[in-house]
Every structure is written in C-alpha cells, then in structure tokens.
Image (cartoon, rainbow, N blue to C red; front, top):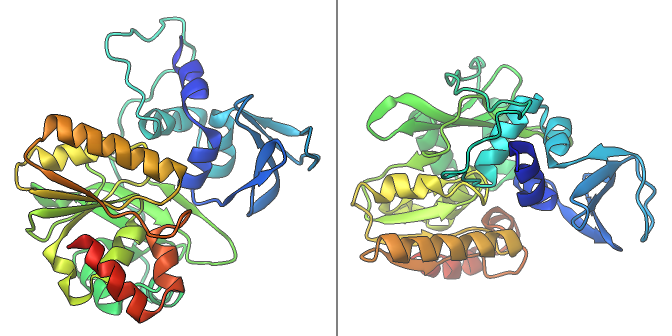
Length: 316
C-alpha cells in the first residue's frame, strides 16, 4: 500500500481537525465543525465534503480525503500535507518499502526558519493573558526564554529549542491572536521528535497536547510551576518527543495531561503502555482534565480559583 493510501486509511479526519483546533460536532450520520458548519465528515467513508447539504443522510459538494483536508484548512502543499500527516498519524513503515511507483515523494527535511519578529508583543500578550487566561508571570518568563513572540502578522509564535543547544530552534508553531478568525499551523522544518520542551531541571515531566494547554497547567500550578518540566506534543499522534527526553534518564515521574476526549484518552493509554514497557523505572500518572470532553485551557478559563487549586493536586 502506498504512502497516500496508508494516510487515508490510518489518519482520522475528525482527529486531525481537532488537532488543528476545530470543534467537532455530531450531525446525524456525519460530523461537522462548529467553525465551518458547511463541512460534513464521514468517518466510515474517510472523506469530507464542503458546501454540503446538511442532512442526516447525505452529504454533497467539494471535498476529499484527509490529505485534501490538510491542504484546504492548513494551507499546505500536497507534499507538506503528506509529511505532516505521516508525523501526526505516527505512521511507521519499518521494513515496508515505499512503492517505487508512488507519484508523491516524501519531501526531504528543510531547515526551520522562524517568522520575522514584530516590533512589539501587545497582541500576543493580550491574547494569552486576557483571552486564554494564562498567568502573566508564565507568559513573561517564556518570552524571556524566547519561547513566545509576536510575528509581523500579529500571530503568536511558540518555539521549542534543542535541549543540548538552547540557541537552536527545532520546533515552531503559529496561533492567530484574532479570536474571530481562527488560525494555527506548524512552521516548515519542525522536528517532531523534540516538540516544545520547557526545561526547569525537574524529575517530573508533564505531557500536554498543545503548548496553550501546557501553559494552562503552569498557571494552575501557580508559584510551583517551575517544579516541573513540560512537553507540548502539538497533537495526539506525536509521541516520539517523549522518548527523546526519557532517554536522557532524568525523568522519574511522567504526568500525562492530554485532553479528556476520545483522542486524548487513547493517546494517554498508548503513552502509558509505551513508557511502562520501555522505561519501567518511570512512574506514570494520568492527569487528564476532570471534565469529559475538555482540555486544560478550557477548564482554566471556566473554573473558579478554588476549583483550580483542587486541580493542582492532580500534579503532585
């Protein structure tokens, strides 16, 4: 089976849409997106349609596979979409040769080039603190570490660095600061085996799906947030970054804080089983949001200070 067929068969459009930040809603026999209600997704057919007839039994219009979805909603070229979906779906070829007749090649790795920096950080600062509820001291500290900045388009840029070379960026993703126009995506050249790693010299490592969720947990942990290291995987399919940092032998306890939904729970179980098998000396604890269907940033924005203090105990 060729690369493209494996992606279409193994990568769920709804899971990938959630990873991109869209809200998935059930609609009869299909799924749609809160942000684009003209889209209909069929998990059974592994296809989506846009400009659809929103009925319970049929969907019409333009659309295609998960590759087309990534190109349409992520703004990727076909080769870029294929490369990202291979990583997102954690597709491994092992000894299976890629068919020589495959028309689309997997693009070679490219150098990560960070977007140009804006002359101020006002939009990002307001977005993270006022809209997302992240603590000011967390945002300020991560800005000092050059892990957050504002680009020329007023996007928030999150940056991960090589743990052995703190001046070398290895991962960067963008998130729009305009709350009325959703935008997010990875910068070309990301090293998904490293992700975004916040190093505080701790033996406790918190794993979150998105950097916003990791910062939300830092905020919940209050003045104790530097007692933990953090990894943001940028999706449920990118587990390899965990291996990168566990191989260093410093981590004694892994706190899995993925979203409390089907994709997040499944990822948490896979990570737990992998760690128990390969790193038996590392303690593993689930720290999923207590409310079903929620992520940590949603709870941060919705819950009282007293409730958040109770959540803090989950990470002890």
